[in-house]
Image 1: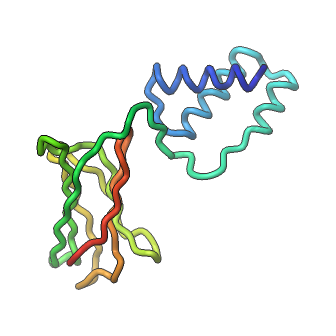
Image 2: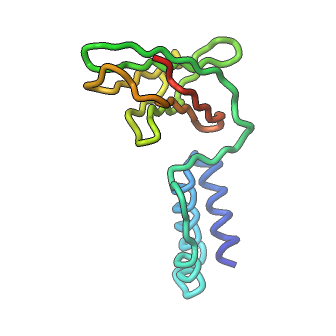
Length: 152
């Protein structure tokens, strides 16, 4: 059945050729389905019926999310408010590759990625102070998601 063949393709690409996002995995599964079964009516129906709602960049975990600690430091600069986010594991080593996003209930302000030291520098230009309830959220592949309110 086409859905079963598509799910095999999703698993193959997700685990064998690291495609970590939901959208990438589903697209790979659909291509695998066409490769294995052609473009008959049952295959094209499966492609039409398969709808992905939500964020196709969502990361799919394949392991227990790793734990880490997050701290931040906010300071004023000539560029605006700079927020340095630092993520470290249990041994104190920086966690690289996490996405760090700075935002308010009104919207996103800046996004960055932690480097080898576990740091990401986020900047809100042209302001002297952050709005109340500005928060930083960190997440990553096979990593827990954390959100904390920024204290300036």
